[in-house]
Length: 250
Image (spheres, rainbow, N blue to C red):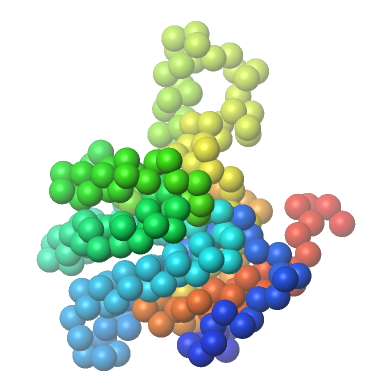
């Protein structure tokens, strides 16, 4: 745990020219509900403030040269939440993109998604697809929203596709290896994250990027997501920078 990661001013001052910024950062954005509860506000207020944090972190990640930023926005398990909360969460992508899309285009950010988006409400799916279309030629940061995403379901889906191809004699058993298997995942065109951050003090993956995070560096912070800021992200990157990544070697 790193309880020292708190909101500070002059958030751009931490990283130096020697700091190794990860190509791909993935974040489990946790703590919106608790943030609201601490302030005696409805949970949806926490989700609203969390979206403001998404904007701030996206801006900063783009500015410091991160190539991919993957955010766990809605899991396959989140459908079990109260209906009013789920309806609000399904409305957020449209509201977020309608106000932030012009800036994303200006900052050369490309929007992508991973997850079973065909199962999302039509208004949510159309808002996301419009953002993907509007930014598809951008060459800066790729902002990846994990929407209706579950790591286990993703792996099962990949196995089903491979099995179907094998049944049709389109693939041989000898062709199935780690590299080939990865091509059946949502992230087939995205490098694995070097750094995975979870906010709010919880220390688990919660079914997020199970395959892809095999060699990610994990940083768990106590800060609730609405309070996470550019300086907190920089501190997580510094922790990553100071680790020795051995990938099973010495």
